[in-house]
Length: 353
Image (cartoon, rainbow, N blue to C red; front, side, top):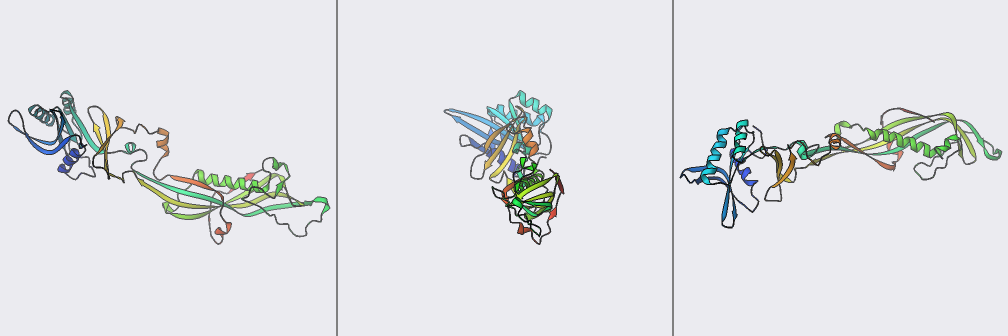
């Protein structure tokens, strides 16, 4: 038997079926005993009356909360009640389904057959009723920039320094101060732009396929990505009055990853949401009631109820519970945040210029 979370027993199922027919324009009665034209009494699970001027239209509904499919004999009992009570319409609701002979017979008598079940993930919309994703907000920093200087010159024969000249970088600003004068300037006007480019490239490599950290716990973690810049032709930069020839640069890109969990229950504001399959007309409805509403809403999901018609195949494939959404932030976090930490290192990278 198909288990419905909101229904506990047969009587509860009958009350549920009665409730989903209440819309304010009809009279819905549960568990009625009516006397037919033959004088015989008929017990009907749900009776729906529609009053139009002097005319009254009767719909008889039978509900079976069984562990087996409905047989033709049960449909025949409903048909006999419809004739005896002069009902305009008949319907059968079950949680299991209908035997082939029962369905064919019902169709011949104009009786509609409905199967009630939980909605599938497709009917909720991918990835399902509950959406569980992880968000990683990522920011970078640059640390331990170490250029290998193997030559130095100066303007106007200014004396060369007797001790190694430190290279001062203006990272994170719009204008760098270490001008590139070798052929590399065609791609990067300044050393700062070169370093920032490769640090951005490293961060993009992480955000393209981020790993789940510590089984998804909400946390902040620091990662370290070493980069080696090797130059086929020496890089020459100008800093003030000095020109520095550089063979390679090693540096460390630090990532600060703020991981949080996102969980959304699409049914959190609903008293219930179930699928009602019209087995005769091959249609499926989502039947739901919002917590702040008194009546149920019926929404046609589409023929054969295999998929929400508004969904897109490529989008469905991309949306999977447990997926990680990565977002990078512009700018740099203070590098001293990583002092005295042992960050996780990933993917040593060598770039050639």
